[in-house]
Length: 96
Image (cartoon, rainbow, N blue to C red; front, side):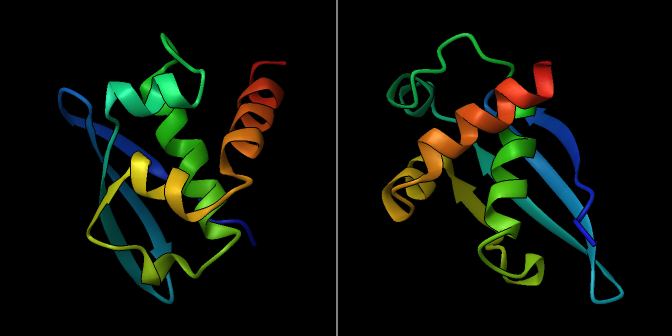
């Protein structure tokens, strides 16, 4: 079963992501540096949707319970070569 993520805006460019995993609530902060959005060619994109789809992408690659307490999109870009393309595809599919 795919994890369901709640995304809550905290401060500018920072979001709290919650999900249920292994019977507990997992929380992780996601930071969206505008430079990362530019690098992803997603300037002006809805940051909340970018964060949600990033969480979905990461959940396909690692258990949700292993999400770090703080995650920066720049780190995801550096760690996964297919992340930019997959993120753009997920966002496009979501808008259809």
